[in-house]
Amino acid sequence: MGKRPQARYVCQNCGAVWPKWSGRCDACGEWNTLVEEAADARSASVRPAATGGTGRAAGRIGFVGLEGAAEPPPRIGTGIAELDRVLGGGLVPASVVLVGGDPGIGKSTLMLQAAAAMAAAGRRVLYISGEEAVDQLRMRGRRLDLKAPGLELAAAINVVDIAQTLEAERDIALVVIDSIQTMWLETVESAPGSVSQVRSAGFELIRLAKSRGFGLILVGHVTKEGAIAGPRVLEHMVDAVLYFEGDRGHQFRILRAAKNRFGATDEIGVFAMTDRGLSEVPNPSALFLAERRGNIAGSAVFAGLEGTRPVLLEVQALLAPNTGSSPRRAVVGWDAARLAMLLAVLETRCGLRLSGSDVYLNVAGGLRVSEPAADLAVAAALASAATNQPTSAGSVYFGEVGLSGEVRQVSQAEARLKEAQKLGFEHVFLPRRVARGRNRLVAPDGVRLEEIGHLSDLTASFSDTPAADG
Ligand code: TYD
Ligand code: MG
Image 1 (cartoon, rainbow, N blue to C red):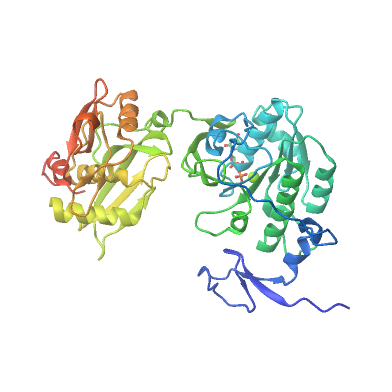
Image 2: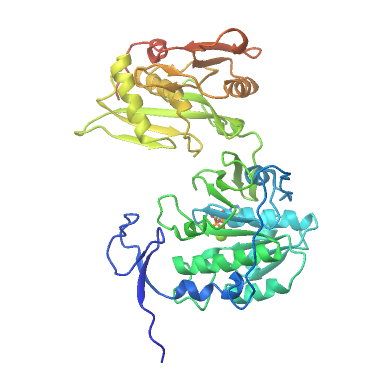
């Protein structure tokens, strides 16, 4: 009988390894995430043959200079333009992409649609599901009205079987693994979905993709709060990491690149979940603003930017008289610390009374905004709510607000203005331009620019009558 491998404890949140169990992982601070896994789990999956450790004569590596041709990588269109955009222009052959997101957000739906579109374009695509039976996949395909007789489906979880099968296949363009958490290597002594299994199975599949030259998409359930984070251990092994996010109560879904070796990481893809799957949204602004009702206090439109793409969004603020001891501040879709800062600036620099109210802030449509350029729109929504005066119809806002209340420049003002014009907005509140002359911002036809130097200029445009409470 062999010596029992020494136990070790792996944090299922961050992958840190500890010799002893404890209630809290010292690396990431999460509670109850340490799980016992066999100590030799990792080495068992990393075959010496793959690294050339056995019997192969030592080779030499060559060095080249920094100059010299560097071709842009070739791209394969996925048939879904919004996905191609986030990938940086399509899938790079033999690259590995991790697609993460909350359970039920639509990862399988998107991947099946992309796989079918690629197969319909005549490429060889294999879709391996560890979560659903082939019949379920077929039913989903029928519901999505997918027509791709060439698409090859399989239900499997055993990585050794999958690897053996793929070794023997030729001309594969893409393999989708849905999901990496269901994949299982028998040499690893822990349950599917554990960090060790995810890491080892991922490593095997990635090695195979690189050696056989096919594109690989690994689907992984990952929650933002980190409740399920296993696939995060794969982030450094793959070429691109895409997150599919959105609010399950809303139809919008945003695909974002968190990492991309072959492209920018600030592009987003916008989709809407319909009863026939995910449909692409080439003009998100119109959709995000579709449910907006004019003439309501506490609403302002922000001219934002996601990657290179301008997006107009509605910011909503609600003030309610505070009854408890400390006022509530609840934010959806924006940064809570930034809201606190803006409230302080509005109160101290603009004389707006807000500290006695509960404040609720919401970015409509389920989008998450991270740009400081949203400050001015948020301030407008708050000032509008506080004075019970709707923002003027047809107006949009963008600009960063500093601690003294000054309104600062933001990038790509022209693109924001153009989007506002396209959607019929006539009045744009924006930071004051210091640069004149050649760098002067020209208002697009039919758009009036209102330059705001200090936040108090903006709040002064709302009447001073306080909100009628209740
Ligand atoms: P799914 O792709 O299974 O999510 P994931 O793989 O990320 O776990 O999508 C699940 C949800 O999407 C499910 O709750 C139902 C919904 N849905 C639709 O609204 N329309 C559709 O056409 C499909 C296929 C799913
Ligand atoms: Mg799924």
